[in-house]
Length: 165
Image 1 (spheres, helix red, strand yellow):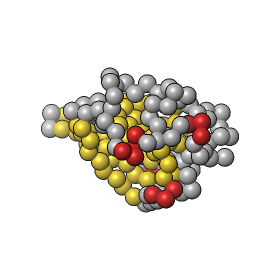
Image 2 (cartoon, rainbow, N blue to C red; image 1 turned 30 degrees about the vertical axis):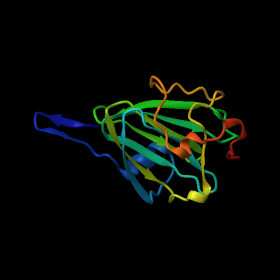
Image 3 (tube, helix red, strand yellow; image 1 turned 60 degrees about the horizontal axis):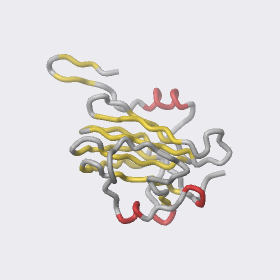
């Protein structure tokens, strides 16, 4: 809930008890990350196979299209994706549970993106699925080719990705 007037606004960006009530379980966050990216930069689709991370994400400057892909083979939504526009203006947050791949693309000139994680970054367990995998068919809401890191450009196909039980 955002409280605003002509002076500005106030809102609680995180409340442990309300968050745990909303997702139905206890959560401990261990790391906060902050990234700034230019227009059309796409980061993802990232996940950690042996030390999966839950992520609570939000944007504090600019706008992104945020995507989560269910990699839990036993889930009825396995292989499906969900996307949401997150921006400084709409103040929305998105919870990406453990067992999901995550990525986002910047829609504004630049964006600052914050996320809390439930486990530490473990590069030896990090995996990447190619952003434009034909089987996933994600509509990234961006015209043309995005700007990718070398690592993200080398992402693998969903059909051969290591997934969760």
